[in-house]
Image 1 (cartoon, rainbow, N blue to C red):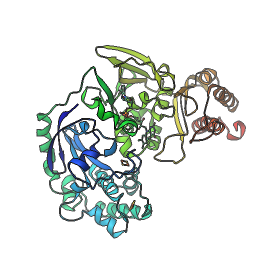
Image 2: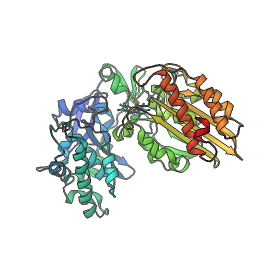
Image 3: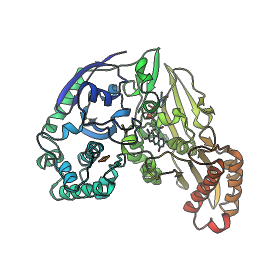
Image 4: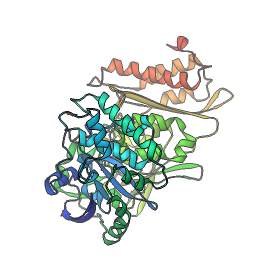
Length: 473
Ligand SMILES: Cc1cc2nc3c(=O)[nH]c(=O)nc-3n(C[C@H](O)[C@H](O)[C@H](O)COP(=O)(O)OP(=O)(O)OC[C@H]3O[C@@H](n4cnc5c(N)ncnc54)[C@H](O)[C@@H]3O)c2cc1C
Ligand code: FES
Ligand code: FES
């Protein structure tokens, strides 16, 4: 399978006839010989392959950092790809100079990834904050310099830029101080022309792989993908919009975790999620990982699925011209076994907008706080009227072969008062609903203990005056 794809890479227009599922990393290194982008883990874990993707969002070009090892080339058609080679012309840019001055590079293998991530932060934000600049490199790992000097380089570049950036003409400001080269000013117009020239459609009954963000598929099957036909969800009409409609929140299945974090609706109705979702992967992963992919991958520890189970979500499943709805909690039939027909896609997901008297909590424990999947996660949504629970949905991940809706503990708590005694009993019921196994993420006993603690944590955090740690522990 080949497709005609064109995009701008740094300052050059690229036209290629390639398999749309080829990883951009391979195309950059092997075809374009842009070897500044490094191959480290090929699993989204090290950040050595980080690049920026610029695309029209509304009237502006917005840049995001992504892992090129997990990115199908078909998804960059009509976009601006920026590699480390595209960030300097004849001399080092200001961010690179700060790395040299702070001694933030030794073997240099990780350095392009760090520079690209940090430059991406300056490109996509008009006001700079040192902590956010450091966070923008959360997907980059250095194994020889030590992160302290890298943090110092981020601090000194942010300080330098905060002094000079007026924020009115952002691109010009960055170009003047040499953060990005001058060709960036021509990209908007050039991408506009490119967009009109091409259209990539991938619809076929012999499709072997459906790719959304690729952050699960490319880790496991990047070679197999090249053997068959692929359907890129970016080009077949599945939306990434998050909207409010008839007292429901509707999430296009192609919305990314970053879309969720940045959504005004999520911030308004579920404000605690904005910070908690930073525990999901790293920035480049969050920029690509989709909500639909998280659900269909059916990992028992999928974070977004845990959250959506507690929000009592419904799936809208499309197959050619037919559509059906399915409660998310009925999708999972066994380990990676789904109530999903061949060719059926999640088009969108909906959940009732949280009521005024509602509470929500998501908790996750993993071996590392950041850039790690959960050992156990759990979410709860509840509505309370005069201290009585009038609606409740509890979920748990990592304690069963599927992302688990805790049916019996939820049923037990419905209609009850919030008290240490009732929460204690609900935990006992939850522990009888689960079937954890021992693996690299912990023994089954440890996981059961974690779930107990996470359920306690929900209620102690949400109702500190009603639930007492000494009474329930
Ligand atoms: C480094 C790293 C860190 C990670 N950290 C986390 C984490 O902290 N928490 C977590 O939960 N996950 C994590 N993940 C896993 C992954 O990022 C998520 O599961 C992500 O949401 C998958 O979405 P995707 O769009 O990338 O899926 P893809 O890889 O594109 O697809 C996954 C599966 O879903 C199918 N699919 C995708 N969309 C649809 C649709 N609309 N309809 C039907 N089928 C569809 C695909 O065909 C494929 O079978 C991590 C992954 C990596 C590589
Ligand atoms: S090569 Fe490690 S994240 Fe891509
Ligand atoms: S400088 Fe060697 S891995 Fe970072």
